[in-house]
Length: 256
Image 1 (cartoon, rainbow, N blue to C red):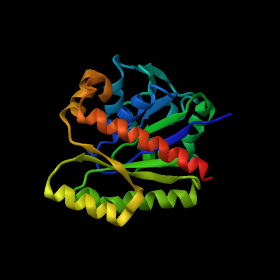
Image 2: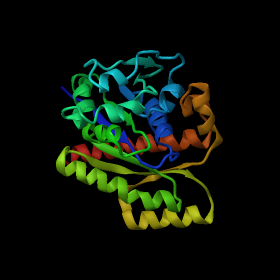
Image 3: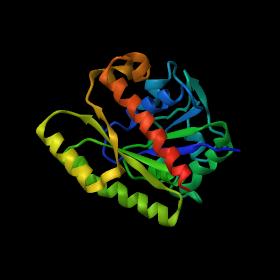
C-alpha cells in the first residue's frame, strides 16, 4: 500500500517562514490529498494558527517522551494535525537518555503512514533532538530561507546536518529544495537571491514567496492563506509553490 511522503520543513534560523510554509502548503494540498501536519515547535505557532480550539492534553509531548505509543490526531478543516505543547521544550532534555531517541518520531509515524499522502513536520528553530527526530523520520526536507546575509550564512549548517543524518541514520533523506520566503524588491534581496540561484541552481525552487500582509494575518484568523485572502500575493505564491513541489516529488518518484 502507498505510504505518505514525510516532509520536514526545517531551518535553525527563526522567522524564515517554516510554520507559514507548513500551514499554507498543507491546507492547499489538503484540498486534493490526505494531509497530516505535525507541530514539533514548543512555540505552538502551527497548532494555534490551525486549530480553533485548545487541544488541551491532546498533544505530541507524551508520545515523544514515551508515555504513550499513539499520536493524538485532531481534525482541522481539510487537514489533520498533531498539536504541539509548551512542554516540548522539556522534551529536548528528557529524551537525551532515551534509547534510540532520534527514531522516536519515526516509530510513531510508521503505523499511520498508509493513512496519508503527505505528512509535514514543522521543526523548531534549533538543531536539537526534536529536529533530529524530524530529519530521521523524513523523506525530504524543505528549507525556507530569507534572502538576507545572516540566514544565507546559516544555510551551510542545516545542509551539513542533513548530510550527516543521511549518512548515519536516514539514507533516504534528501533536500527537496530551498524556498525563498519574505522576498522583497530591494537591491539586497535581488542580489542575494540571484547569487543563491547561480550557486545552487535547481536546488532553489523557482517559486518565491513575496512578503505579504495577508500571510501574517491568516494565522490569527485560523485560516490558510488561500481561504483567508484568495486574491493575495501570498495565496498566489503558495499555490504556485504547491504545484511546483508536487511536480518535483512526482519527478523524483519517476526517476527512481
